[in-house]
Structures are given as structure tokens and as C-alpha cells.
Length: 203
Image 1 (cartoon, helix red, strand yellow):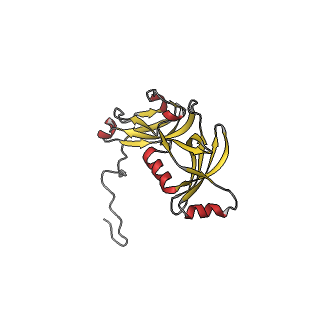
Image 2 (image 1 turned 90 degrees about the horizontal axis):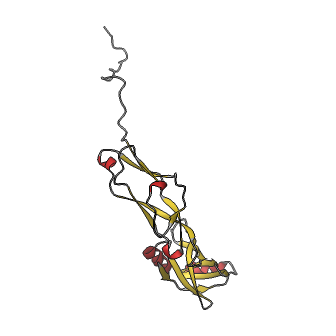
Image 3 (image 1 turned 30 degrees about the vertical axis):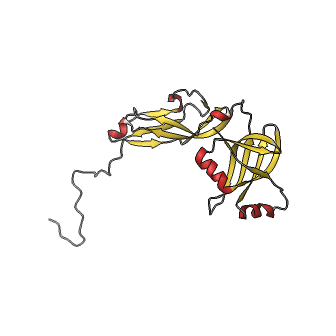
């Protein structure tokens, strides 16, 4: 998946320029990587947010810098602590013919037999490291848990091999398991002990 994004080269001094850009709705960014030197740029914050929302963080983003088309992946994004808006972005220029590694979200699919039988689903892994050419990178990895019974677990090794990408995460990593539901606190005897009343005579 590839999408275009307009960027503008920017100055890096004085440092106050970054705040000026943010106040005008722009996000300071930098592009580096395959066949290019580190280049400071700026991008419209609303446009960037829309691109990421519609295409995901693993989409190939094509931009024009110095009259040259550059294919990139978003490498890092710094968010504002209070507003959660993007403050700064790093874009990694990539070779479309070479595999690269990114994280993809794990999405559990289906209702397991164990949950239907009263068990509880416990998810232990939420992201996996995948490797593929940039145009084949998945945004998510779906994991079918339909056949998991109580006491069963699914690991990376249990996943079917994907056509377009390889999973790099350790094959022994457990993704999810179905465990027995915890019952309430059991009493130590069939009947709860009667409370002792201070001052009451006993026979």
C-alpha cells in the first residue's frame, strides 16, 4: 500500500521555528535512510493524521524532496503529552526491493470453544515483528482462536505461514490462552462459623 504526502523542506535554526511550525498546523519531521542524507521537512498535521488513520502506520508514504520521489515508512512519532497530537516525525526512506522489519498489531479472530464452555481468554502478546518488502508489510496479523479449548494456548509457531511476509518474533512466544474461570473464595467449611458475641454466655 502506498500513499502520497506533501512535505516541505525546512530550516533547523533557530529552534523556535519548530514551535512556529506547530502553531501554524505543521509538524516538524526528518527524512533519512536509503540513498539520501538526513533532510528536515515539515508536513501538514491534519493531512498526516488522515493518511495514518486511513492507511495505517505501516503504509508506504511517497513524498517529493528536491525533485525526487522518495518512498518512506514512518519510523517514529513523538506525541504531545497533553493533546496527543503529533509533535515530530521520523520517516525512513526505503528500497522497495529490499525487506524491512516493522511491528504489526495482533488481532484475535473468532470466539473460541473454550470461552463458549466458560473459560476466559488471556491475550499475552499484542504486537509481532514482521519482515517484508515495504509494499507487502501488514498493518495487522489476524490470529484465529476459534478451536482453542480450555487449557489450550497458541504461539507464534502455531500460526500458518503467510505468503507476503515473515514473522521474526520468537516462535515460542505465547499469543493467547484459554484458562479456567476463577471461582469465588471458598469457605473453609460447609457452613460459615457463627460470629462470637462479646459478653454472650455460652452453654
